[in-house]
Amino acid sequence: MDGFQTVAGIGQGPSHNHAHRIFQIGARHLAAQIGRDNARRGSSRHAIYGKRTYPLYLPHLPCPAVNQTQILGVLLGTAVGDALGLPYEGLSPQRARRLWGPPDRHRFWFGWGMVSDDTEHTVLVAQAFLAADGDATAFANHLGRGLRGWLLGLPAGIGGATLRAILKLWLGYPPTHSGVFSAGNGPAMRSGILGAIAADLPQLRALVRASTRTTHTDPRAEYGALTIALAVRHAGRGEVHGPTFHQDLAAHVSDGPWLAHIQQAVTSVTQGETTPQFLARQGWDRGVSGFVEHCIPVAVHIWLSHPQDYAAAVMTAIQCGGDTDSLAAMVGAMVGAAVGPTGIPEVWCQRLWEPMHSVAGLTHLAADLATGRQSPRPHWGTNLLGFGRNLCFLAIVLGHGLRRLAPPYA
Image (cartoon, rainbow, N blue to C red; front, side, top):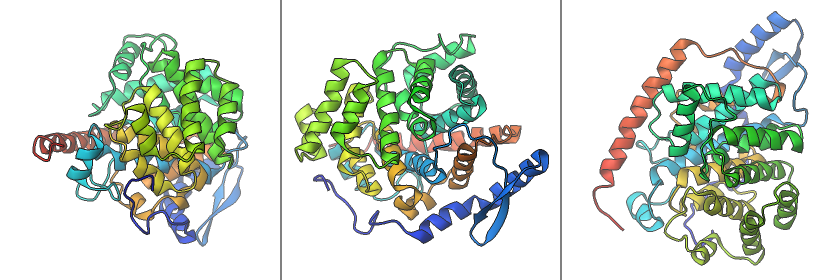
């Protein structure tokens, strides 16, 4: 697998039972909420989870082409990639391999994984989309409110540009003026879900722009976010062909240097080059940074190299080194859109230790996005749970930092 290490038996094919178990995890919680919606709105059909049938309210769909399985694939793909890559973040490929071994399991906390801001911001984007009913201006306002609340939870990890932008939001700046000039991958890491839920390309472009400019104003940050979102859209439709993707991207991005970066990745895959070879030729074999002109072409290269193999794609992303959690989250979203939840190794989903963004919670969110139903706002107790979760997360991160002070160093 691209000269990297893989593990036999992981990601070798979808399982019907795997899909059944994933969807069943959130069924009881979904049934209770759906029943309350039906009682309030008085209109229902039925949805079947396992052997039981639950009433399902079907309102007007803001994005009729979406598919719940595809959406869940993007959400789970992002979360699992993020959690698997987190322990390796900031390490060179060589040291990561010696310190933690292959990324074939969760290594954040004794075989369990937790997500970082990549997944948390993806969820915020999804929630803002639901609340905005497809309007880009309302979407930006809801996303801005979500980011302000997220910062109150004292997250352990946050990019410098995103932090400054959220502080500006707290000072009263509107989302149209809160962004700072940065070409980091913050907008790109949260844009994959937009490729799965936007009704059409004009709406996709408007939502990507609104999401990006809330925190980042450098045009390259927007190009990177649009590239990821468009790749998810192509993957979900089974349109995984490098030259076609580049042609479609060129119809929406006129920046020559950006298109040249993506073309390099497309050409490399077309010529049969592996991801390590591509990294070495670009001079990134010591790790991929969070700068969009570095990480986005690499993400596209990995996606085109492993369009139907989630495990191989995510492990390849992590073994690149550097900003591993964001890279694996973006790659996970792209491949997850194509393979759905059945293509993600079940053990990786089961070993997510997340009180806030569990498999059940992401399943619920996918159902909301597919039906256009907006769930009630979280109770204040949920916010306290998130604060407690972040304290635990911070303690584990500090433990990882101390571990890195010890050998091996290279």
